[in-house]
Image (cartoon, rainbow, N blue to C red):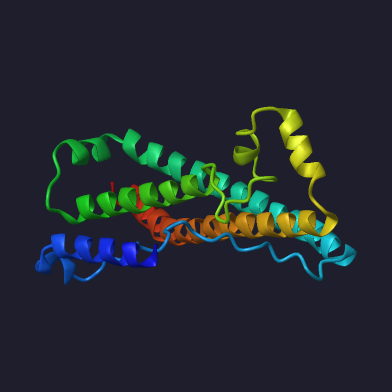
Length: 206
């Protein structure tokens, strides 16, 4: 039997052209599927769950504060822009721009105020994403479940430490949102200052 296999292999090798037989072998590529890292739940106790509750309230407070400040900033910028645009001389500058100091002041004031208002609006614009892909707390991912029963079964299958880890991951997601909000709020405030000063100057010289 072994001799017959050897003869068959030799016959098969003779039928293969040398240039093909000597070609380098192609190994199958490694799998491109990402490996799922286990959630770090070891060492999470009751005091970590209490910290998650504290941090949820902490970030929620600062998000509400950022939205309130941005809403006020957006309202003020919009009102000032509306006031300037309602002026006849400003409308004349917009329709027929001229290379004058007055036009430069008015145009700069409008530019700063409009950009500041845009940054303020970006603060209060909804953020519908999850940085970590967390799918049990984030409402967008929860809504993708087929039914409420499926969601309940998934929650029931989690241990206390896993639930704490999930809450902490969601705290991370919300903190990223909060950080972006304050970056836009800071830009809106710093752009509003020269915009308001130029707007005041524009009302004095018009």
